[in-house]
Structures are given as structure tokens and as C-alpha cells.
View 1 (cartoon, one colour):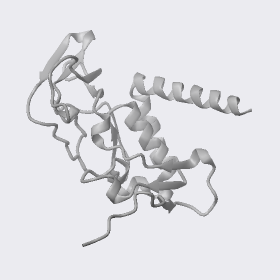
View 2 (spheres, rainbow, N blue to C red; view 1 turned 60 degrees about the vertical axis):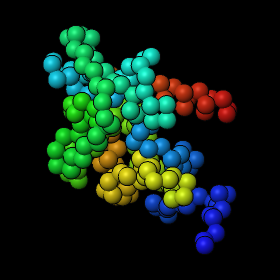
View 3 (cartoon, one colour; view 1 turned 90 degrees about the vertical axis):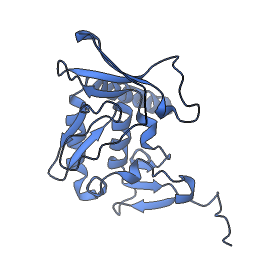
Length: 204
């Protein structure tokens, strides 16, 4: 019989470069998984090609333990598009050489761009922000395997090429291109910068 791991064990540190990182360039894996970024999902409207949303339907019954199974709606008000999903479970599309799609309706994600290494994509601005903070960090603290259960964390599941220090600048440029494709992402980035500025002023 194996002893249970000590839950108070120190985090695993992964050094990306040799210089000591500032606090703003330190990333700690908070054990987010892909299921934490499913509401909303920004997609390309199949009717008009503009940005649409996949959102959880309010007040609809769903599995109390698995919010990912709750009914969803694909909406685009400008062209009156509305579709409903109420069955099965989300299907996560792997698109190494194709297009990243949402797991409910299978329509293309709005937040995606191609690089020479592969496809970079996100479900929503919060998902994209997590990827950006991870890529930008020069010191990364990984979650222990026994803290995350059977589902790998989102950052642990990122493609290897996004994690390499030599690709950092290129990946961050790709994040910028993805953000530019969505008004929601641009607003989220602006709000984040304002919040960071207030925190810095508060320390002064």
C-alpha cells in the first residue's frame, strides 16, 4: 500500500530561463480545465460570418454536478440566429491541421489563428488571457498530478510548442492577433490593463 501524498507539498517549479523573474512574470497553475471556459464560447456565426456566442440557457435544468452538460444556445442577435443544444455531452474537436470548433454546435471558434507551429485558439477572452499569462511567464508552477484528478489542467494540455521559451514572442504575437479578432477580447484586455494600473498605483 502506498502512502498518500502530502497535500502540503511545495509546488513544482519549471524554470524557463535563468534570470530571476519579476512577480508579474510568475505563473501558478490554478488547476483550471477546459470545462471552466465554456460559458460563453465566442464563435463565427454560420449565417453572417460575424461574431456569435454559445451560452448556457438560464433556468434550464441541467446536471447539478456537471454544468458542461447544461443546455446551450447559439445566438447572434444582429441576424436573428438562434439554435438550441440539449443532448449528449460536449465534443472537443482536435484540429492539428484544421479549424478549432466549439464543443456543442461544431461551428468555428472566433478566437483562433494559425502559426508556423500549429493552431492557437481559445473559447473566450478569459481562456485567452490564461494562455497569455502562462506563455509570458518566465517561471511556471505546475499543479501536482494528485491535485488535478483525472482531467489534465488546461495549461498542461497546451501544445508543446506554446511552452517553449524560444517561441514566446511568436506565440504572444499570435495571442495579439486572436484578441484583435474579437471586440470582447479587446475590451477584456483593456479592463485588465486598467486593473493592473490601479493595483500598481495602490502600492505606491
